[in-house]
Amino acid sequence: MTRARTGARTWTWTSEAECAGVRVHRSAAVSSVHEDADGVTVRSDALEPLRARWVVAADGAASTLRALSGTPFRGRTYAGTWQLADLRVEAPSLDPARVHMVGGPRGLLVVLPMHLDGWARVVLHLPDGPAPGGAATPAALAAEAAARGWTAAVRECRWTSTFRTGRRLAADHGSRRVLLIGDAAHVCSPVGGQGLNLGLRDAVSLAAALPRAADAEGLAAWRRARRADALGVLARTDLATRAWTLRSAPARAVRDTALRGVLTTPAGRRLLAESVAGPRRKPQGGDRQTLG
Image (tube, rainbow, N blue to C red; front, side, top):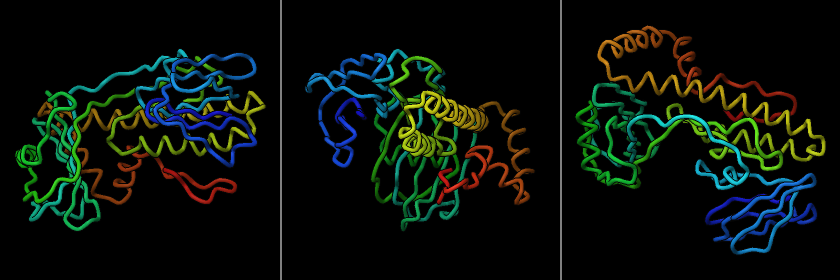
């Protein structure tokens, strides 16, 4: 079996006997994937052709393996861009132990505690830009956050990023032997923080399914289950993203009134959390833990 990731790294397992030792090939981009009845041949610009029964594509939203397998990636990109930064701050104006989400005409502000002394993750939705990759200095980001209702003295910035996001799902057809997981299979809004969890569930369930993959129906069932899970996450995060990025004053007033009502009871707070992150999964069979 071969597992490959394009770009800077490619992991390969060339036979069942070598599963105990994984060979890592760096700077080996995949150039072609040819599938036949018995397996897959993967060619690279830096390696001899690799032969495998399956290829697991875990190479991200811009997946080369997905494109080479002929699988469309359908969906839409949300308007505007997002900026985030991990900041060490002093004297924040809002309780540093709580998550704060502030929606207004300038866009969404999210402040997340990081359980580290003085550190917070600040997320801004910028409806009109700037472009991804644009500079987001700590001072500029703090000034924009202050304009939306959160002030603090910034002492240090550990990391910052500017990006666009969207809702996309790989089509339910294409290669039978190139198995898509993680962002190669689906991309969801960061609202709710479910992208990583969804990818972990892909990987854990595939690890259980592959030993039984000689039965074609086994992998087909795995694909159906993963697609159903992804569709649920994409629907919930899409609804939450649309709600939190409303710019119309009347629409925001309706949203805020509804939220205040929901948040008054423990059941309402749990319902709101599960509407974004998904319901709590109950362990089944021999499950020792839940990835939710």
